[in-house]
Image (tube, rainbow, N blue to C red; front, side, top):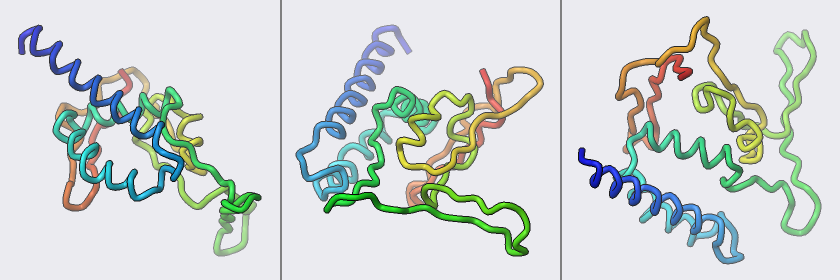
Length: 166
């Protein structure tokens, strides 16, 4: 790829990222869960992002957006005032040990934030617990690329990054 092509590609990716950021942070007052928001993402932003970014590049972009605090934030405020209690308590089936109470039922499993660079932003997204990091004796590259794959029909991703820490 020539320098000119690299500059064009980078410019296009930057423009797409900034457009997505603008559209998701400056929507009308109907809120982020509006039909407009979902239609915009389902028909334009997501398909465009899949064409412009490899799964691994999309992962890094998403992590950077969350790290910088630019992602949407969960609000537990109720529409009529007050707060919505989504707390969940987990107790072992044999009733031994101390029960664990989380502010909500959904957490983020390991693999998204390998270096722990976006912890506050992940909690602001609404995750009640977050697994971060990989511990290795020496820094390493992880698995060979490609190591992240989209499962479009299943609306999922396979992450085979390994224990990359570089």
